[in-house]
Length: 481
Image (cartoon, rainbow, N blue to C red; front, side, top):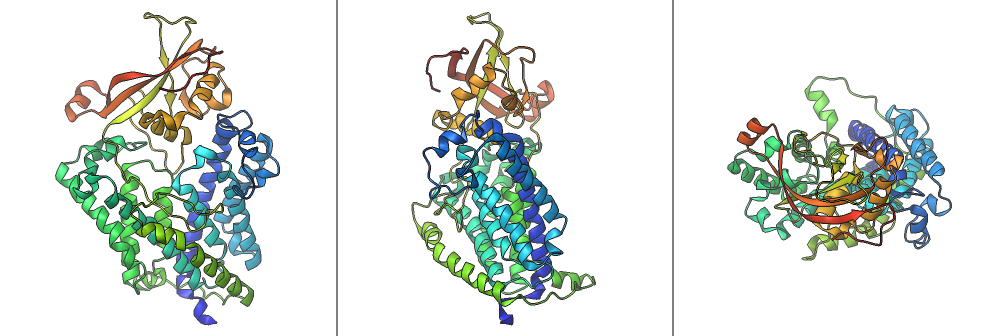
């Protein structure tokens, strides 16, 4: 059944697989360094507590059988090591069944983390990595021709990702339809990067052009992914260029990176190599029959599971970043259906005064990525994902997002808890913990060109209100206002 494979796409498949290995590596590194403080045994939302009320069927994970911080560290660092070896090419020098096993282990380990990660792993790119990682298992290695059916499933994934994002915008905030969303987005996005201030200060007519180009890329170009070559390559190239524009303007973890990586699987790299006069790669062998049978079975499963995301795409009540099964296969995607027009930031402060008064000195905790000190320039972290910083952005939108973890966070700060402090950029109480901690809500905006020159500040901020009242080490039950 030679029609089931296409050797011409082996270069693209290899590039795609290396890219997925990089994203896996980043995901496992984030887990190794952050998970203990966020959801470990003594974390802000402890996994053992979560597992007592969630069944294996609802959240399949190896941690359903056993969880400890030490065991989690073994899993996370094993994922780091395996990702690195696959990135180095291990999967291409072993037999096909071994290569598939390596990719399958990566998928199982990361799915296990996602399914117990709770709010810290509720982002769309987690499901995206799970779905793309699952398809990677069946893509073969350098010795085999890539299966055509898997290549089409990757295109179907990229189509849902881009077209779903386009539809959610057109159905959502009016500013997407009147082309004004980028008047606000670069300033109010979850985590600006070093160039976001400059993007925000671009002329408004150019912002309107950006939005219009975004609509073309997400609502028209995705259909070109299913066209014959070279049109599919052109469509994929447009997606890649657009994603790098987004990478330049913001910190969206690995969302833009994995989208660009997906698009590389569509590109006809062999035709490009011939155009450039480069030597062709050795012709891979055909897949064994057992592998072809597996690919057909997986394709049939994907077709069945596609019913729910396809129905979601045409629904007027389209859901954004929704998984319809606990394995996170064939999901719906989309982002920024509504745009925040005003930026609010929760600023956490502490004092050594056990009974704070008007004259008490309050010192601020600094986070790595989220805005804090108005003089500090936004930093670049993506594709690394600062999970607490992102959730702090959501907390500024509504205290509902912060209810499960904001009070536990203040309690950890009152104890100078080391794992928690490792998530921060600066602890203003290095010698002894504060006596009292509070949180205040500020309105942030980017400074103008003139303000930037005169003050050296990237941000201007104004106090809005108290967010969390002062809490001591033994506070009475409280909640964010």
